[in-house]
Image (cartoon, rainbow, N blue to C red):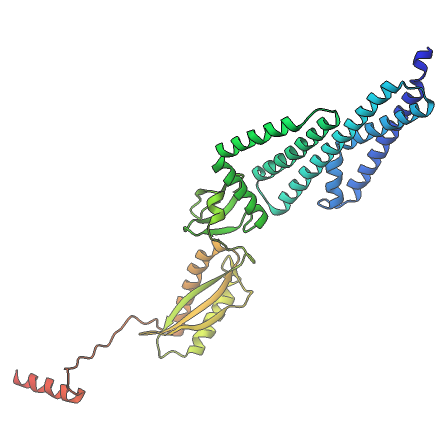
Length: 361
């Protein structure tokens, strides 16, 4: 009985401290999830430390029990040393798991805000957690008295061999990380790559990026090639895009009247043609201007998305054509005037010579 008496108070302190820590943990996490914003920093912290905080409770209870045993001088020194080493290992494991959980949660929340694909989110979480766990494992081995220098040497040689074997894969991986950090595009953006490949971004993966073209085909582009190309993002700085329509009329038409008709038809079509916006205001410019046989106007209007431009062009051209016919405005056909002259002869002399030649015939 006396041999087991020294375990009573430390064990009782361990149980009481553990129960109190668990109750405090439950209350704090419940309050954090209740009052924090869904995507705020407090909610992220609560999600990240939910699991590892159980280890914190165990570490705290073990520490209190050891302190009680030390104060009572009831624990053998050899056992106290072993428990101290166990406490140190538990602290290292708890800190490692906490950091891994927090990094994984932060990457998931950032991916949700940036609308990244699940493949990228999963890869980022796996890489971050793997790095933290490896570092924590090496620290734990050092704390336990195990030499980690040979392990580091083996990891370095193995990592070099893997890097040489997976050179292309790693280049695509780091190119994908560069795209995520630079953010030239997001999922849902309509982009055009320098080699005339264009479409909606549907997924940014760890090796490649997938685009859905307007023909509803999927184009897979390696991240390395995408990072080295010139990218035109039609959704930046804002999704609505400008649409230009060229309209030609005869030289006898009043240009102010043409400008008024084009603006009226565009404003009226904003409430009838899907995708056509009434803001920003449509603009009519006499550009390119004076053509060979017509006055050339450029109508600038805006559409909600790039995919709406084809239908808007179709509908607006029909509306403009019907309005021109109702107003009696004619769209001219190409005409060309050719004047023939004899070399070294004035125009009136050439005309007289042609009449003389005609009489002789």
